[in-house]
Image 1 (spheres, rainbow, N blue to C red):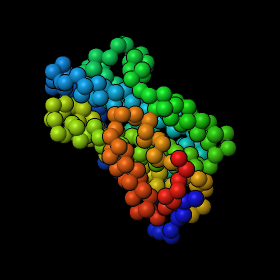
Image 2 (spheres, rainbow, N blue to C red):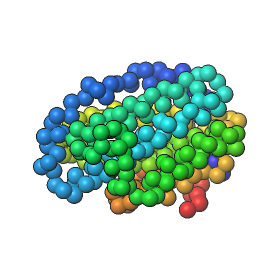
Image 3 (tube, rainbow, N blue to C red):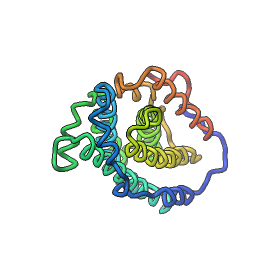
Image 4 (cartoon, one colour):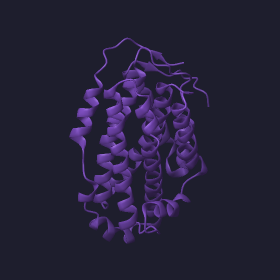
Length: 260
């Protein structure tokens, strides 16, 4: 079980302020240099970047779609407003990655849905199950009153966004910064990472409520493996360590014996 230390909690208005200051417009990002560079990239690297983008595109679409029950279950207007602001972020992220898929990857399809379908085959069954089945089941259970908000947040914000998204985003950003040849995607990812930091912080804040019901903590090790061989063992381990440090800094603790 997760333990909670007594601590002073920031107001939810703090996260609304972060969201407002970080707002950005995906339509203003320039992808022309990326489109010129893309054909000349080494094939293995093109495949890796394409698969990461496919995962972000599918996952961002799903997390945006499944936030409505979180808004309805929020015990305060301020927290509900945070979830609505987060939903707007996730929708923006999906649009940004769809722009990259359309303009740089030249993914098949005339609509975002068609492009998601065209790229879906790049992803492991474990990945699609996380976002199309597990997340959807959590949203349904929360909507039906069979799951506490804090338990849903533990899966949505900390496991899926904090670990699964975080591991891949950090790995891809390291690649982009090193190569310097896809500045548009680097700009998208930098803004997404900034947004995800406040999303994960919001999740930790919800779990820090004294009355929060947490249940058994989700196991981050199995979740991060959903990216398959796109992530190295070191990148997966780093993601789990970041997750543990984040929780510890917030006064939450996950035992080393988390179920596998």
